Length: 281
Image (cartoon, rainbow, N blue to C red; front, side, top):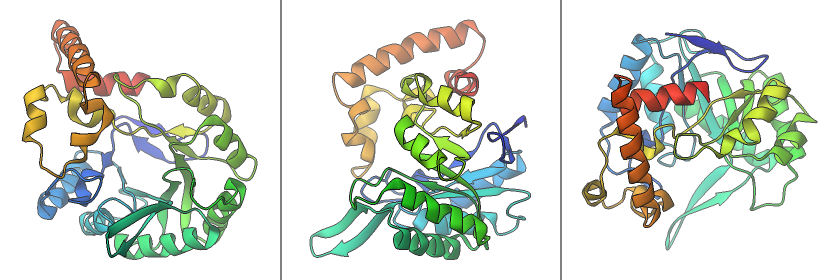
């Protein structure tokens, strides 16, 4: 498989990776029921096929996705044969009315999450540790949060540092403390916003880009229809997600239809077109 270096200082990564949002199973932002054994088999199949990185997050399935990733990578040399990424900053606790999700990038919280992720993943070091979302809950200056991440690198618990869902202003503030090795924004043929400012900033600053949702949460698979929404599991987050609500759903499906025509003229499939576009965006 083709590989590219992550930014100016990162590892050589396969152009395709394995995202594990769906692997978390049922939770507030889950995709419905999932078979853990199938998830493990799929990850190992991807690794054997040349994919050399898996991206998780502590909050996916409230820790469950990381546990499944740990199972999947057990036969491999993590950090050599496969790189393991995860994220912090979205925490949860159980209350009488249910699970509460909240934002927290305080230094002590970052350290607590890092230790918990290391245990669930079954690794001694996280290859790429990322802020999942900006901290809009505690008021912690991002510089303090990022300094803690730099300390985790110095302590040997993390190799490279990244952020997800950050804007240019926050990237600049992090870069002033320690180099940002990667940014993970959403990017697909249906959501191209990252191309305006974020990707150019990364190019200027030697920051790698690892995008998420290149298939637009299934809309670009070529198999999703308006009727397909009714077939989703009752607890699938897409039932309430804006891209799957009218009038946006009809607009997206109309664009998908036109993209399918382009793919057919090129002699390829819509998913292959979507991935190829993402790789060149």
